[in-house]
Length: 207
Ligand SMILES: N[C@@H](CCC(=O)N[C@@H](CS)C(=O)NCC(=O)O)C(=O)O
Image 1 (spheres, rainbow, N blue to C red):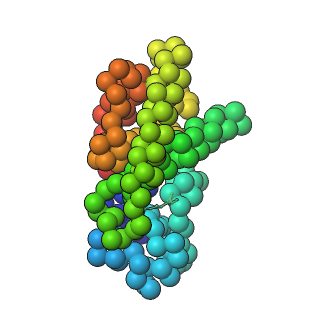
Image 2: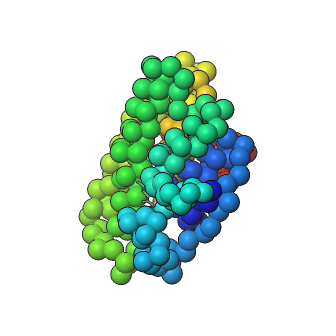
C-alpha cells in the first residue's frame, strides 16, 4: 500500500491524521503540486481529478477521495472506531462530517483559491468570491460556537460522538488552512476555540 500525499493540503492532512490515530503506518510518496506533479499523465492515470490524497493498493488499485480512503482504512483497522458503531452514531458522524465539508471546508478552500497569491496564474481568481466565502466561513464559525455552547460542557470536546471521529478531523484540517489564510476563530468564540485547542493538542495533530 502507498499513500500519495501533499504537504500542507487540507485533504491529505485528514488522511494522515486518520492513519496516525489508527496507530498504523502507510508508506508515503510526496507529490509536489508546485511543480505540477499532480497534473502529469502518470499521476492523472492514478487520479484523473489530479488531486490528492490517493491510496494505491498492492494490486495496483487506486482509491481517491479522503473519506473513501479513511473508510477503507477503517475497514482494515476497525479500532479505534472513527465512523460510528451503531446506526444513530454512524448517521451523526456522517451528518457532522458532511456539515464540516460542505459548510466549512469548501468556503475555506474558496478563500484560499480566490485570495491566496499561490493560485495567481494557476486558477482564475475572483476577489469577491474569496471575500464572500470568507464571510460564509465566519458565519459558520459563529453558528458552530453557538451549537457547542448549547451542549453540556462534557459534550463540547468532540463534534459528533463522545470521542474523536472523522468529523473532528475534517474541521480540524479545514481550520489549519483557514488559519494560514488569515481566517481565524474570533476570540469571543470560546467554545469553538477550546474545541480547536483540544484537537490540535492531540499527539496525531502534527501527522
Ligand atoms: N474531494 C477530494 C478533494 C481533494 C483535493 O481537493 N485535494 C487538494 C489538496 S487539499 C489538491 O490535491 N489540490 C491540487 C489541485 O487542485 O491542483 C478529497 O476529499 O480528497
